Length: 215
Figure 1: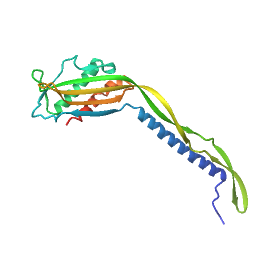
Figure 2 (figure 1 turned 180 degrees about the vertical axis):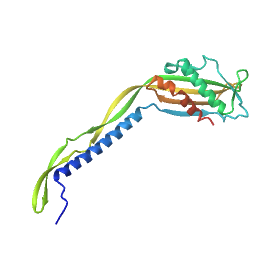
Figure 3 (figure 1 turned 135 degrees about the vertical axis):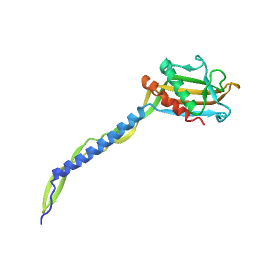
Figure 4 (figure 1 turned 90 degrees about the vertical axis):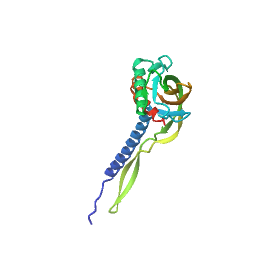
């Protein structure tokens, strides 16, 4: 009677490696979730009084510098040029033409950064200690003693409040009817800004996403 006999030590080692790999996977997923949540992201909004019709609105011009507002990360020529260039590109995609003499639409932007305090609840886990448990296996009528390695999974025990100071930025674009002086459309983006350079680099994409809200 020939049977394959796996030594108890090998069984214990396999169990240990399997549990260790599961723990590594959980740790990796947890780390990825933290990194993803730390990345800058934006939310986009828009309000309008009426649809933007190219039959009524064919030309645009930017309100003279000084009427548009910016602060902090956005208060520089590079940021200003990127906002204006990106918005002009999107308006021209809609069929509007730049006309500084008698524009149908006046364009204005506001870019600000505010300091805010956010509260977060971080999960708290308890790691029970690993242990070796004595076991008995029988082979051909004889008892063999061995130890199995047991490493429990982390146990959720609650949450811990945490406060964090963040910089909240927003870029707002207004389209104004030149004759009535009323805002006919406003679109804006809001997001947490962790890196001044990245905030400026992201401007073209942020502005493009704002104009996706334009009907």
